[in-house]
Length: 72
Image (cartoon, rainbow, N blue to C red):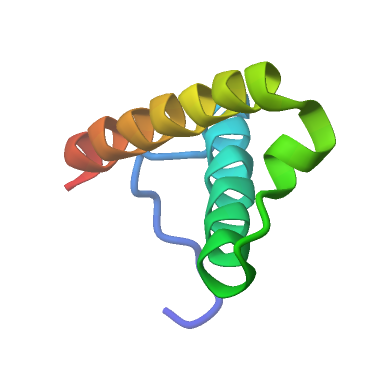
């Protein structure tokens, strides 16, 4: 029916939202690196904290892949 939500059993929780936000920020940062050779993470946080941020983006990607495999 039109207008009815289909229950897929895969509602987004806070972890999904945090992982999505980190993935979006990481994608934007790497887009900037590719287009302009400007690393916004490093400029904002410094070298060491930027490396930690990259680790969080990678962990978010792994989480998203596993979550996607469960849904499919």
